[in-house]
Length: 388
Image (cartoon, rainbow, N blue to C red; front, side, top):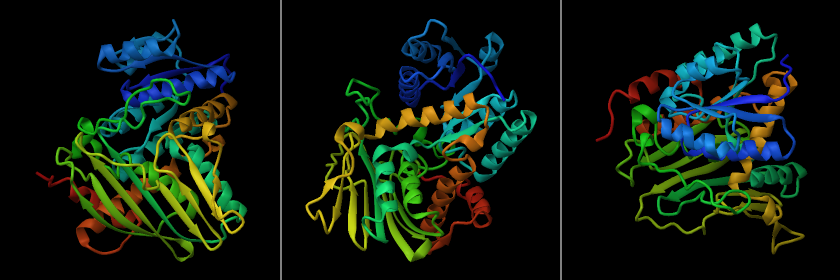
């Protein structure tokens, strides 16, 4: 058990997504959580210094290596916010010192790397008497619209789910996340033409990256999928991996859901007419609006015109970062270990397994089981030849 006056965090990787997590730390501080950022680590000293300035703390210092940050003072918890191919090495470095860890999704781009990281976490847990925390940052579990939709499902208001649909889409011109939860200016949306464009670095395309945020809610709503059938495309040719996906996923209880991802370039224009999610039940329908600022509607026999899924001021994708950070901080501060988290790191393997099954199906042209034994060999082969 760790007892501390406050939780001292390091940010390992200081790019765009780190800025959203920094806002989440500030929200936790405003809510009375004893947490502060003491180190920002990045090989780009300018980026590290910029993130330090955003922390609002004089005690936050920039470093070019995590080892230097550790040598400078106590670090209780670390956020790894690096390109996917760097996750495993950085995570094992952090967990070797028994430091609590929140790592951006995916845990790693291969199942073998994930298993090695889980083993490192188990060793840290054993050394700390079960107090070590290891979590994967999949913030869509905390997305207010997703949480509200799950509550409606569990209430039985729309009956049994018949089918579902998920569609992640964005155009580079949209700047989808240019407002924070208060409506103030915030980091702009992701630039897909950076390290994400490399198959070796990212491990895949849109399904491996942004699309994972849409797979998690489907799992929250319907359970773990068992089979996948997918078709991939590359409308954004600068990305070596896929920038388009159409897939069908089989879930327990005989439910089949459709899953779609679309990413276009700077010239692309996408309306918000298509919902991000639609859940069709025997007694009603839930729609989560295709807008990162939030919104959703519940349709039932009692209210066929629809009622709001949640108040507008409580919704929006970026509002998921604060409760996720609060969840991580609470687990670290309680000394209760990873079991205190809302979702385990082991659970986070589900998105990676589903992604790999979609990739395998796109090559085989048939339904593929979402089983580790069927996917380990496939993922080795797929990196041997890259698209041109």
